[in-house]
Image 1 (cartoon, rainbow, N blue to C red):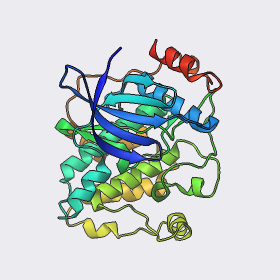
Image 2: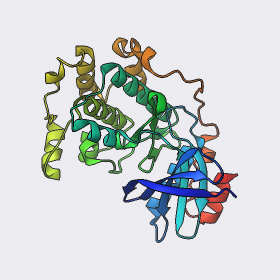
Image 3: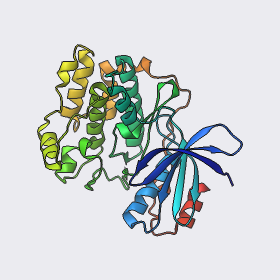
Image 4: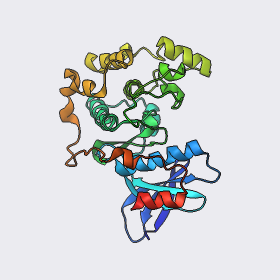
Length: 303
């Protein structure tokens, strides 16, 4: 059995805490997400199971991968690879103090890598539902990872629609706010919000109350006029943000990657030798095991 030395806490949330950890006798750093399963509700249990399964079965260079799972009667520890520079929410918060905006070449690189990760998820019937700066991580070499799959929806039996309300309010799509059925286009909306925020260092929609925020999202009243950044960035980049948030229901992530302005900048992403491989035996790997004991679930996932 592998044992880990727990270091500093690098993240806190309703789910629990995230720590930097090392295997005893080694120097390589990992991230450990410690989640309480004491009195966990069935819905939350299923979300946690799916999060672990997505980390385990997804084989894509732009998605965090599962290294190990530790189970006790009250906690589950999920160990993944560690992104050296943390999440973009923290990075933007630090940079915004001195208004040190990202160079445009880096923005294109970050955006395209997230597109590739999102395309992989959609090709494997997974809607992330919470793409945001806090869930996108930056590693050395400007390599991007998508993480935090606790809000994901796994679509089974050729279903393409769902209607559960979930996600971060600032990035919620109009469909979710109106409690309508939606598909993976909600991730395209979030992708547009992410691109807006890494350009402007502000989310596209803000409001002091949930009601005001909802109204601004439904009416597409941006928190700041992105056109004022045309002096800092190319018109192609600025117009892309506006196009995604306007056409998110009609344009897939694959179509976004095929756009000329995006295709012209693909050379900017870091060279990665690892290729993506789709999930095989999908329905078997994502069958409903939420009524099983944690012991049997973890045993199945670690085999």
